[in-house]
Length: 138
Image 1: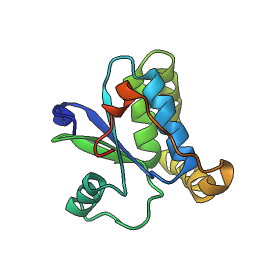
Image 2: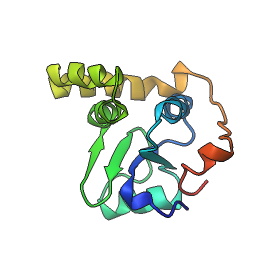
Image 3: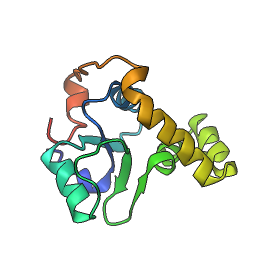
Image 4: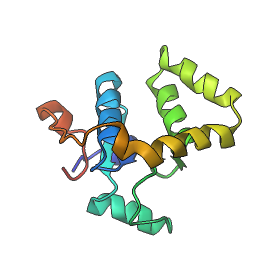
């Protein structure tokens, strides 16, 4: 496990979802400042995170962004914060999201989440050696 995970932003995702795996790969490729780590919600680490917060532990349709000892965000708020942290042109996405009423952006998130297994084929993502270091419990 990463030694410095408490100083990173941790993205919790459904490890069996093609859309989620695509999203993880997308962030990995753009995380030039090495700000993120990743953990599947199905992992022991993911299950502990959910349990400690009284969150659903069997449904994996929500993305979480956690900054230890500071905050955790869910759904579209997590996605928009990730875009903001990545910076550059991705910050525009976070600004756009702030203009939308949060309930509307969560409705769009929920629609994608409900259909995520239909949107893309299930793919087994195999991270390279450098990318493996960014996963907690791989």
